[in-house]
Length: 249
Image (cartoon, rainbow, N blue to C red; front, side, top):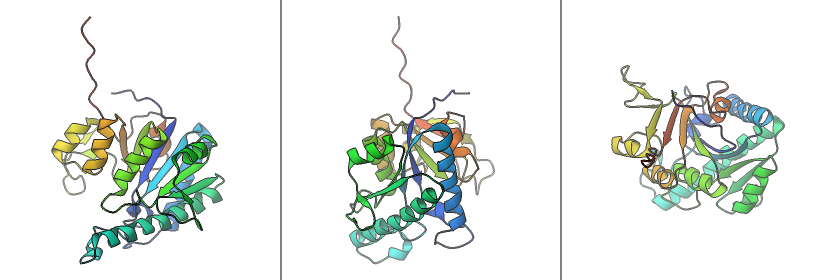
């Protein structure tokens, strides 16, 4: 079993779907948001880990979803960016009610409700123990929040991206439809790209591969998982570069 190192600064990637009850189509389930917030607050209290978060908006609106059919793609993507801000504000409210100071930074100027994204300011907030939630993606159409997560993680110097999902890792097949699916404990970036595994989009995976930024894919709503991942416990699937063999002596 591979021994993992603990992480001091992480970027937590949350899909919009993670904010909604699977039995209800769309919207925000306050109980789920409170659970995620509680896990983050417990992580801060027990480990002092610096936490940045990128949120999606699939529970509200996504630019490439069927509900955007026939729309101009740029307009649809901007609607999706605005939807991520709604999720970010909901999460901020829950985290702060649980006792941890939080900042929302947006890639689109919305100074009445959030700070503009400024890298140095974001890093300073993290150093002061605040949770920073990055919303509105990268502020440009045609880029997903997966790519935004990879970009922000690199900019703030995160040790890893933690990708919270509805399953307990990366499988060779869809475990929800194929009972013979096998979960990987560890897999390299090229294998993810070559096999078309749905970890993050290809642009995000390539960014992480080029900069050797690991991704841990884990089950988000299993209690205590975020803390276990940060502590280096073998939870979920680690996606990283293939280790380079040491030169012969």
